Image 1 (cartoon, rainbow, N blue to C red):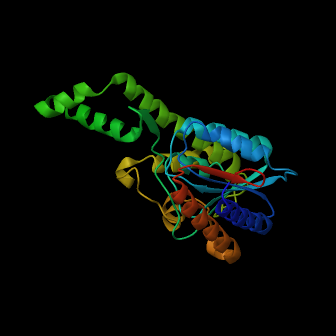
Image 2 (tube, rainbow, N blue to C red; image 1 turned 90 degrees about the horizontal axis):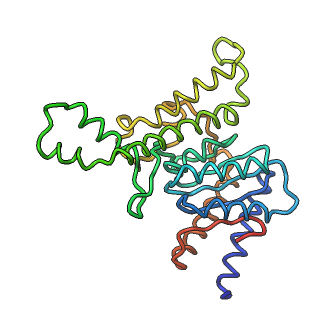
Image 3 (cartoon, one colour; image 1 turned 90 degrees about the vertical axis):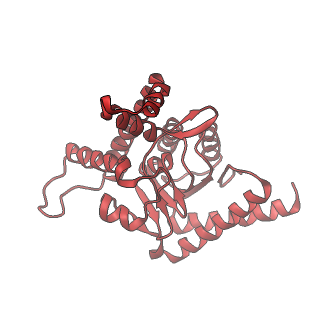
Length: 280
């Protein structure tokens, strides 16, 4: 290890410890696409934390990835911790949004964003957004006998087996979101705000499904990479999200931590890092 590496890692660990102290929780960070192998890295990072508490804060920065990997990562977190806070200083897109919405608490600021829950599928070695294929297929089918020659040729190129995979990925994304929002994010929702009625599990599931459907609406967001800011998530989507600006020390340390980590990753040409107390 070069001396610079040791110095940078020591500084990153210092920031992470300050974040733990502020939130009175263990902490883990990952800056990475969500691909196979990340779930194992998260497992190792969690198991490396000694004297675990009941709560953990996850500093999350990701362009998205594979929803099945998210499921394993959430299972790992919930097998070790009762309460999970997700901090999004920059972005948590696609599968990263699903991960964030599995938490009991989400913290963002005005620069942070989540995204549409458009699942991605590996095709020809690349991640592709599933909903764009499904939307195109639905558009072509709706035209019926009015298809142009070019559109007919395009329709014939669409693989029905792949389309089925895309549909299943979409359904899995919605299913996980409904389950996790109902169980964790809405666990403190006891009475309705206006009428004071007791909130049932069915009401939680219905609310969660509305959120999932909205985040799954390609017509509303238009782009797979569309960032959805904290105000839009609060006002239009109806999610309760805590503003990092309300905890200045936490916001400052999180930003400094992420800036230093990304700079280090850029110099090392490393696209994936997982960090916890005891693991780097």
